[in-house]
Image (cartoon, helix red, strand yellow):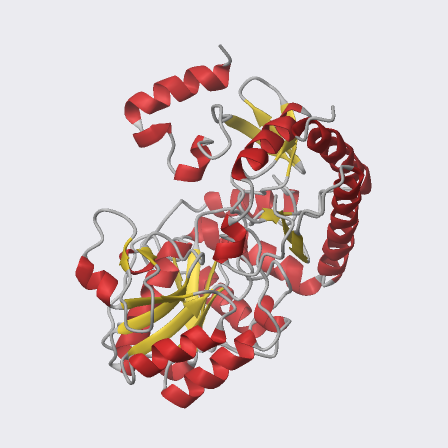
Length: 430
């Protein structure tokens, strides 16, 4: 029995399912999870000293690779002054100023401790600001594990969502409406059927939680127009895409500007952190400036602020990072496509910049329904085949992969070679 297997057996006795976040359990791909003890640059090292080229990067934040020296120094320097104060610090102000200078739609920002906190808070503020109770989310968009977001789709314009998890009340579900991603007509229908009752529309502008799915031309523009017309706040969940796709997030690429934005991942440089921000008049509804209560003892943690400030400053001052990430991403995408063709398959690859997903699906993937049409058993076999060849992927078909600047051309060539052999193996040709 490997050390990872031993640890997993112990973990199952003391942690629900043996993991502290469900996707880590490998249930979607079979086998037992690897327990990681170290990471450096583009590599993970498990408890049995196996080394893997990895394409998760802690689910996004390690855009400069693991254990980046600049981030390490920022954390080390901050630690010398203690770990938490529960009081205001200079770094909180500097971090807020930096975020506001980089993201044009954000005029004020509040730091929290996770993406889930950020999205929960943004919805509460939207409800407080508009005086309305309902919200629209999209099938397959994940906004953390807040009750309002764990709602499955209902059918038809007036059918309410139903709880997708025990513990979520029907009352919460009644205030959550769902629509298919990239389907503007369905959103318009929901709005018309719930006239004057919808506080916010929240979405990942580029979805990373059904695998990577891009917005179709006109979709975001249509949402912005609808929100303006109906007095609804548009919320971009850029926890994944914020500062990963550009120094201004995805909204720095598109012309569409949201009313509120949620952030996480990269803004902590790998430390636990989140934030939400937007127009001044909306954010001034947040306590103590306004009536909408939100608080956090560890919010603005000085260690997380130090890591995040170092990360954002570097990205802001080195825009060539995004050009290089796109170049490496394109090389990887082209290599994976060539491998698919050699195997006689036309599997869909969705990519933007340093985010991508290979779907085991030969049809376009534009929403959750088309993502779910992927061959999940084939993906599981492929995951294990790649792992056997030293490449660590996200253990779910429904997750985006993330590229870091530590991924060199030579390593991309190794990933492509592993892909070709693994795909043939899975398809029975090797």
